[in-house]
Image (cartoon, rainbow, N blue to C red; front, side, top):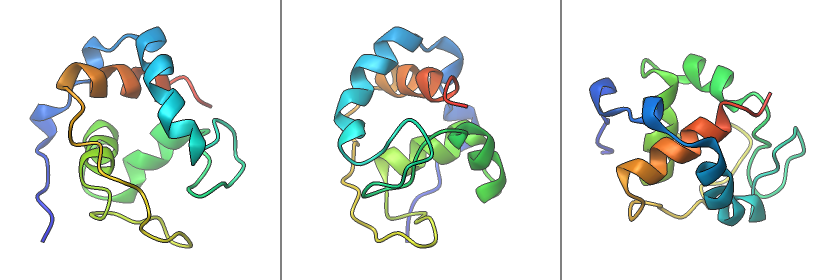
Length: 103
C-alpha cells in the first residue's frame, strides 16, 4: 500500500524554475512539455490536472508521483515510471516550480 505524503510536506513554494528545468532533462525522455504522449503523458497543464486527480493538493500529488510512481497511474498508461525517491526536497521544489510554468 503506498504511503500518502501529507500536504504539509509540499515544497514547491521555495522552488527555482531554472533549476527545475535543468532537472527536468531526465524526465523529458518519457514526458513532453506539451500535450504529446510519449512513454508517459505530456505535462502541459499537469499542475492544474494534478489538483483534480486525488484528495491531495497538486504539489503533494506530483511529489508522490515522482517518489512513488506506482501510487497513482494515469489511466491509459502503464506503470513504467521509475522512482525518483533520491531527489532532495529542494530538487522536488525546483521541479514543481518548473512544472507550474507548463500550460
